[in-house]
Length: 127
Image (tube, rainbow, N blue to C red):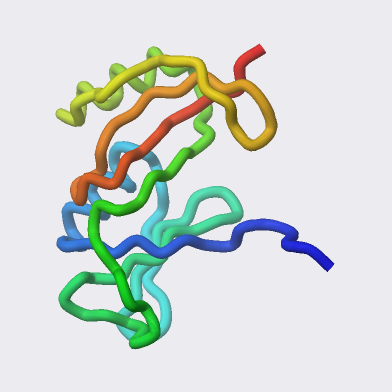
């Protein structure tokens, strides 16, 4: 027995509208409400569940904190186009493109923050 894949991650956020605007408009994810008043952002076969800081969903979560995530997304298209897209949405680039090592090998990455200052890495495979 072993872990097969990642289904979802949970982000604790301060503001649903700001978070949706970033992940939908800038990164192209799809908003998906579910359950009773719950929220998620879908991309590929994965999703980010969103927990609002002032409305915890699960009492078992002890240290939920906005801005504590460091997420790497594999993206389509050249990173230069992503730099332009970030700029057009007023999202400052932290660094990149820079070489990194991803789960399946070499990647080229650039970095920015989401509205809660989670570190977002956008990457493409490197030949």
